[in-house]
Length: 360
Image (cartoon, one colour):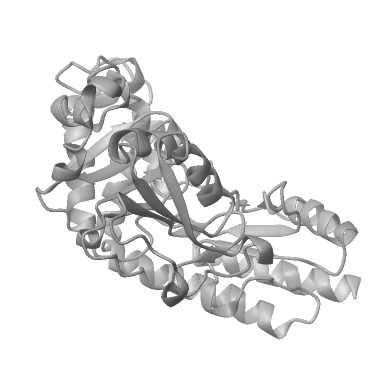
């Protein structure tokens, strides 16, 4: 029986990548050791981190105006790190569209003023407020968005237009590399790797170099300065070598597939297939505004919490794992990141049809 992992993160990785890592696990390039056993200063690892950066630059069309960094601590550490480096006691604009954007704003408040330009919290984050309603700060230090909301199941279908002179920053943890976007619209974006880029343990940070120069170094610890990572090639200390190696393999796979435009087409097809079924069912309901539905995290419910639990348990028996909704909201959630094949989505829909017939 095929098993399809719908976990929100750490999430499914491409089978081809896992098999490559398995083959090299104990003997990388015939050196007699695995990559996680090798020195980050050695001649075998440097090409790995160089390839990971080159792949990211190629896939996202990133110019030399930006630094590509690999930082531990996940996206959650970026909530405070970006404010420590860029806020400098000023005001930052935040759009509150979910659990993680809310957490990011709370961390930033420790280092300066935070203006919530718009929020869908009172509506249980079932939509993204229209950009023309946002109450922006003309001279903000930066504006922060969360491009895809993993818990709520919403996503910016079109990236917002930045305020002139105000750098736009995005947490792209759950939709990085899933669709084409213009890097030059952003001063910085960041993403935990464990959804579309690789295993947990590393966060990708792409930051405009002139923005990184804002940091008042005597006020920020060395390991929390972007300049430290820029000046040392993300190797001021020992980086998460295995996570970076896996990221290199995942981006190799994505290039072989045809790049970001190719995976975007596949992702659109997967999401449409699942949402088309949900829209025809009177058994399953999705609470997210149709215009803002995520193509990465599809949230839905059955008619009762008891049936939600039964659905998750029965699905697992059928090889469809980790469909339980986030603990804060309940219900069900199918995370269909880049590595999820169309066959997995088709298998889910077939199971959903059978479950509906058996429980109406």
